[in-house]
Image 1 (cartoon, one colour):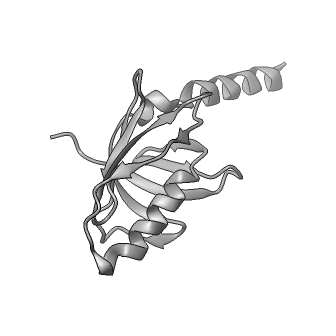
Image 2 (tube, rainbow, N blue to C red):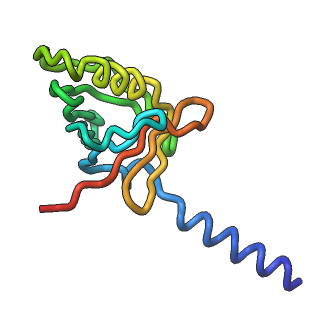
Length: 134
């Protein structure tokens, strides 16, 4: 009986601590893309939950924007992204890799410091830290 009570309490804690996509709403600084440290680059990500589910930010050189679907809790399907087209030869590969990984995001994991975007296999592909509210 004690074991059942402990298990029930543990399950309750896990369920109530799970966060959903609404908790991902906000502005982020991207720090890691596929285990590469991108913290020195100006890469940002903004998620705006609502009727249109907007996604936007800066991809090292250019601004980008688009929308995403949220078919189930913590799932994400990033649509086509549009953006500015400034030429930044030194940042081109960084930008391509970030946008490529962003398009592969299948789910969102809310953490204490920000969010992780995961691919369809559950592997973390992007780590982003929540920006401080001003």
